[in-house]
Image 1: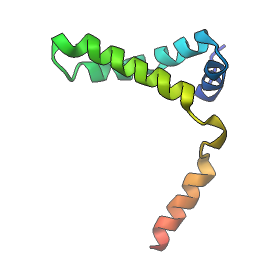
Image 2 (image 1 turned 120 degrees about the vertical axis):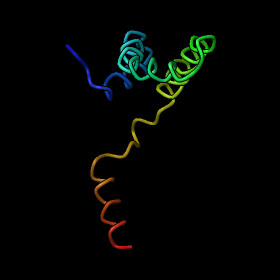
Image 3 (image 1 turned 90 degrees about the vertical axis):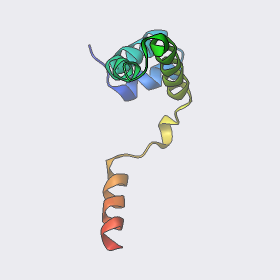
Length: 82
């Protein structure tokens, strides 16, 4: 069963290494795309740095205070009023 990102982040923050690996796998295409933007000698280092950053941000993300769709809808309305 495939889990959504919210669930995976929540599980990863509780220490579930499998959930963290699933997040890394989910973002793998994007990370690989970014690594191809640098020279061959730097690709592995960049990929490792991006993976570490993704892990750090996942584990420290404040999942309880994340904006939901209604937040962005309100912002859109505020921008129109300016």
